[in-house]
Figure 1: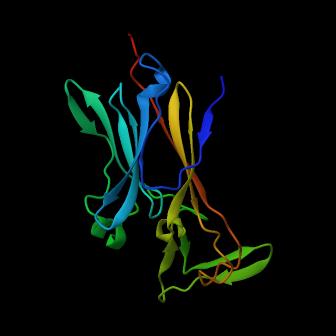
Figure 2 (figure 1 turned 30 degrees about the vertical axis):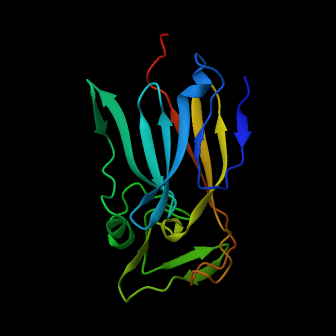
Length: 183
C-alpha cells in the first residue's frame, strides 16, 4: 500500500475523502492560528485524536485523545503564543541542530573551536530550531495515518553566531489512529 502525497501551500482546510467507508477519508489537516502564530492540526475524524503544531519551531502544542466521551490533552503545551515566544521552557521543542546544553557556548567540531554568543558563565541550550519559521512542504497519507512534512528555510552560516554551518531542518509530524474503525 502506498501513500498519496499532496503539496500544500494555501491556507485551506484539507479533507482527504476517498469514499464514505474508506479509512483514507478519516484524516484531515487544518491550518489554524494560535494567537499571532500559524499552526497545523492533524486530526483523525473517526477516532477523534488530534494534534496541533505551531509552525514557529515545529512545536507540539497539544495532543487530544478521546476518553469516555471527553477529550484529554496529553501534552503540557504552551497555553498562549506569548508564552511560546517568551518562555524559558523548552516543552515539546524540536531540539536541533543540538540538544541539551553547551557550557559557556564553547564546542569543538573537527578540531576547530567554536563559540556561541552567550552571557559570561551562561550556557547555550537546545539548538535554535524553535526560533525558526517552518512551512508545510507536503502532506502524506495512507489508510493508517496522515503526516505533515514541515521544513524551515536553510539556515546559512553566520545567522547564529558561533554556528558556521549551513543546515536545513525538516520535521515530520504523523497522526496515526489509536481507534479501530469497526464499520
